[in-house]
Length: 347
Ligand SMILES: [Zn+2]
Image 1 (spheres, protein in one colour):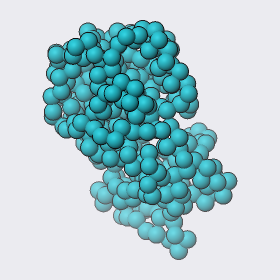
Image 2 (cartoon, helix red, strand yellow; image 1 turned 120 degrees about the vertical axis):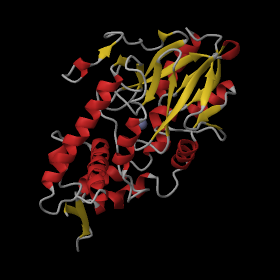
Image 3 (cartoon, helix red, strand yellow; image 1 turned 135 degrees about the vertical axis):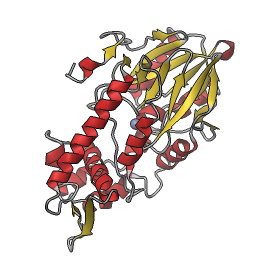
Image 4 (cartoon, helix red, strand yellow; image 1 turned 180 degrees about the horizontal axis):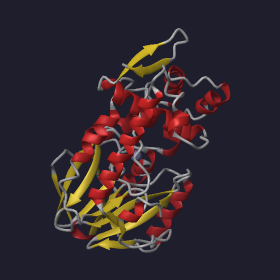
């Protein structure tokens, strides 16, 4: 546990659900964990009692053999005979929607998410130009990545999303900000969030004082906030910080169920920690911009650890998100050099 985590209360201590099991965390709400093939090695899913002895699932796990076999173990064991009545997705990232097509088809269950998350999941699963792997290469080159070995590694990730999301359901039920959704006789309010993904869905149940935060508020790591090739002028960090404000009205004792890490209380402290984190990052970036710098130039300032291709693609996006925040607020100017590299400098 790091110093910041010690300001939060991990309600269940170090207890986590073993593979193939569910752990009750609130009345009618159970916690499942699925493996992930990354440094971030797990995702949390939430299994909610729904109407007529059916269940609602929030998020699905990545489309890997390990996740499929964990599901088979659950369906043969503790979930034997249970009907999955609805599948919700907080957002389009592969660990969240990966097996949505597989699960919805298996149970003939409808798929619930926001319009933008549905659209992006469909676009990325189809590998459309602009959101596919190859589109990232000129974006990274423009922002200073010129190392041929690293570019070759990036190139080899061209099939990243479809490889983890074999199918997305062809139709969906729309979730919108402020909407109240009845799950198992309790009202859950949709809180949309921006900056991490196009229209992220968090769900809050006042009766249980439970927030399914998805990736918008995580207890240990900060949510990835990146500028991507598909939206090259974007200001996702501003969107993310504005979105955090939407959670600050929730009660201080809200039980937060995050997609990564462990359930906790201390939502308001965590939001303050995240604000402080980004504010410190922005100070570092501002200090590095006394001369023209590209996103790649400031990676050693922001990330003091070696990065593989997966980590590097997130790091460049994240560096750019901080540069764009300062560019959009007028602190920095943006210039494109004769080498076609984009650089930022104090205005
Ligand atoms: Zn995500």
